[in-house]
Length: 160
Image (cartoon, rainbow, N blue to C red; front, side, top):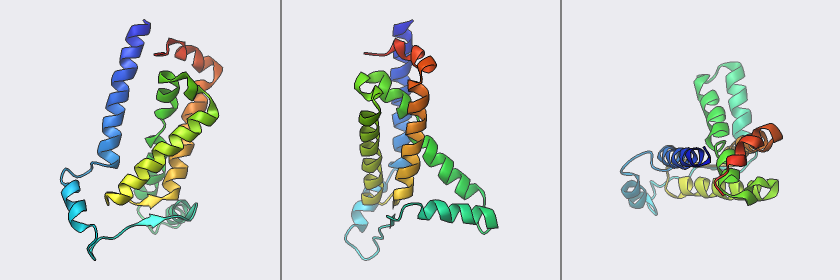
């Protein structure tokens, strides 16, 4: 049973990473050539937000007053919460050091920062502190659920 669970975890992790990379970095098959062509030219526009909660508050206001399609704020907020949730399971499953809150939080923070910087540099998204906040909250929620004692009993089938 342990071997089957481990194989399932490995395969599902590979699928998760593939889907995440496709959605977050490799949205457009020709993005590398487009990004390289525009870097350093006047058309190259870097989009970023370094003000915490600015985007989230903007979405909440737009949702409340109906000035924006309600799907946009919901998709952005929920999507960012869900994007790194699987890491709350995978990291502690594959590495017992990641079952410690501090190590998990630091590792996931580093991964999220890396993804945000890649989106910014490759011009496939924006660098947004609110995305970081929502991604981290999602990962921490999943981590809390997966390291909770009853759920943790399932993780006794860990890969390590």
